[in-house]
Length: 89
Image (cartoon, rainbow, N blue to C red):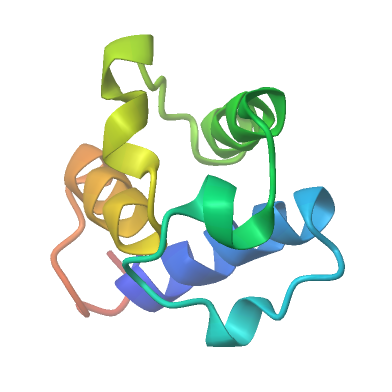
């Protein structure tokens, strides 16, 4: 899966939690909870949704690595073993 495909997955799941947010303009390094005004329960719901959708178990000790959009993409890409930008990975 490419980084752009992962980005679409993350943004899609975020859209369920913050439907009013302007997700296409979400700064890559902005903290998701603060930027989207979601609470810790919603953040855990995001991680659970990504787990179900991508089949990646995220241990609680790694939650901090997913605090930003960029962090989510880096973490998920690393767990999936997808090289950056390589189509069809």
